[in-house]
Length: 355
Ligand code: SF4
Figure 1 (cartoon, rainbow, N blue to C red):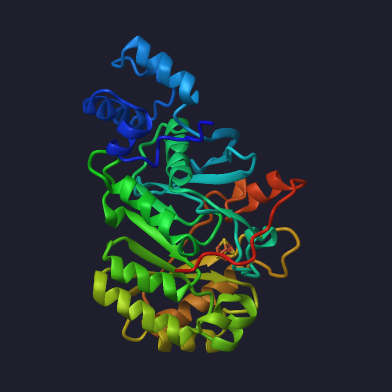
Figure 2: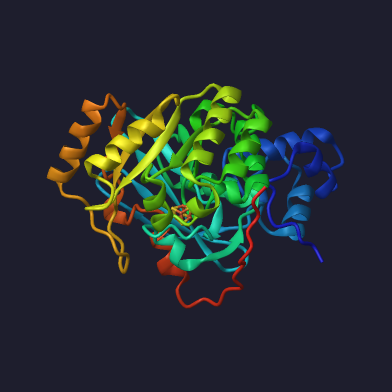
């Protein structure tokens, strides 16, 4: 039985072997079509008719997934619900900003095992990791549905990318490959909840992508009540790993600080954050929590956010504030796909990969 589901994870050498191509240049032709987002062999017009028919008979289409829902909002945000080959739904989002950047927000897992209490995806648990080709396909779908050229990638959709490091890094290499999508590493960001082992692996790989870390609070005890990962890797171990990463890759870090009303916006949190940041080259990204059903948090008021910003100013912390682009289409990670996957039966994985 043919189990080849997608060509998006294959190198040109693997294309030759998997598709039994007679000539190496045919792999380059197919690869060029895939990069342009052409996934039907019948549209690959520089292949012979016989090859087009043979490849169609072999695997139908070059892509494993299909778009099942599409939504957008006035900010230019686009969200796609994407059905995988085994009937699960993941999400990919394209956000645009005032600087003209179009950022594809990609999922790395179906669901997530990390259990962050402010996150809708956490309520699904982990269903499975995505293969590299399924990550690349999200980009391909977004590019096909958008008139804007995608300029940046961020692994910040459903799932924890550093719990699926092997496939995530494989997809990064495909995106970066000059013969494929040719996206510069400085335009690619991996966003983690703080899996120290994954950060250390990234440092060893010397693949100089940008790194964003969801901190939420630098108060160790408080963080453990909000993010389960903190019981495994506390804020001190996390900081040590980030210092190691920064020494290896030399890039400024983004510290994602999700603002939870009445929880992490007071003076104590501001001082702890300032102390924790000492020695790190980092930009703090303030993200007012995006409301989600059934989760025990509130979005802070403008006055509360303003007070916290003034505290950060006083402590000379460099920060930016994310405006809520995409909010009208449930822009918080995982919200669409959680709704779409409701009612499906899962085989839940309890022990996720953590290399
Ligand atoms: S915030 Fe990210 S790591 Fe945490 S549960 Fe949600 S998807 Fe997983």
